[in-house]
Picture 1: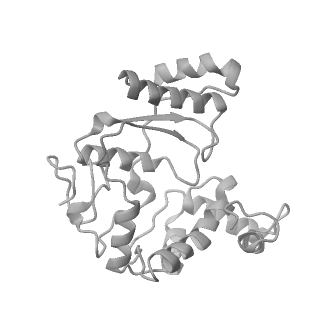
Picture 2: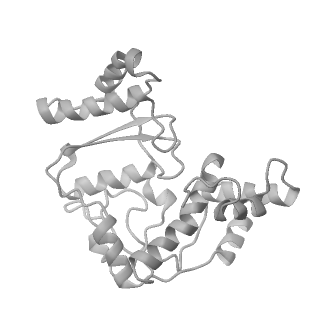
Length: 259
């Protein structure tokens, strides 16, 4: 399987048929524009994301959960900010809906949901223009560490560009040295220290050094929190931010879980 579709593979053929090639028709260009505005993903990630939205999700459903749906979008009202009210209404009327099944949800949460129940020190480096694993994931990841009572074990760093894991060699080395210095010497990494290390190793490692501080948008901006069978509301982490918990529930400031 090719997660970056090219030429005549399964996903690339579908992408070309829907959105056209280098010289799309007016209808093809309009479809692509609607897709990009509705999803909020960069155009450079369109084919890759459609791979995971089709082949990737199909593999998860049919090979890992035994055909039991691990997610649901029943009742979700999609309101992307870049779409007009009429466009959003049409999206909600036409989008395929899937109903979750508890065993599928439980499988996904058991094997893929981060719980931050670890004694390890964790350092993340995320590009803000990542169109595959969007940076809003980091906001929810931080909430998991808060809920586990271990926020001091997580340091999150960012770069303005780099896409999905496309950091420079110097940025990779700086992140690695920041983590090993934290583990071996107890020196907690900061944006300034990581950037300084990056600048120091750049002449040898090569590449740009743009390690910055950032605050990603709320997870709910991209993924609407919802009630699902197999995932009790009290198991969902939160930080009392907008959209942290499903409708009808609130965030407990004591436990950092919805209730």
